[in-house]
Picture 1: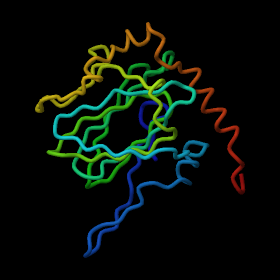
Picture 2 (picture 1 turned 30 degrees about the horizontal axis):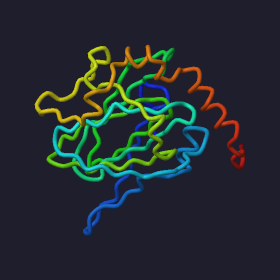
Picture 3 (picture 1 turned 135 degrees about the horizontal axis):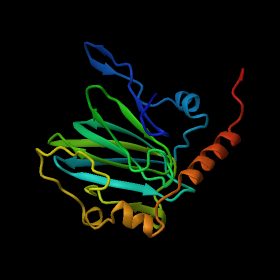
Picture 4 (picture 1 turned 45 degrees about the vertical axis):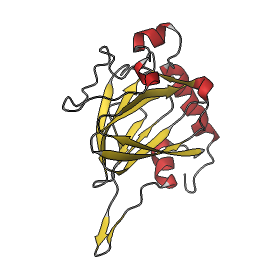
Length: 205
């Protein structure tokens, strides 16, 4: 996996094997995550969303602990996937990174606990698959408004945005911070360190 400019966020570009039948690729390997993160990606839930063009989902995040790490791929169609650093005190606080995900390059995005996530569907229909480290727990799930001008995500302007009522009513990052909803950089780093400390030693290490 290749790191992005935000600590804890990575992009995975698979090797694709084409032949006369179509293509094949490995889109998730636990050993690669262990090697890059220093701890295992614990799979607790797998989600699938289907969105029409212009749908924005996010920006979503979860309390830490327990947090929810995500690995996201676009199984069909195309999306612009967005990572937002919502960790108060982070050197990259409120910085965002956008990664094009589609059914051609088959890239994936990994986000560690504490990071915000969202995407916009660019194709007529886009199917997105998420692997999640914890199950859905509504009491600890939060969001910030995807059009928050302080974050300033450069969403494509050639589409009409479609938001859920919940996402449209989400607070700005400043409002979420004032309400004490945002995770801190310190607690997320300590959480990751505890996970690394609990990971069994790898052979030869």
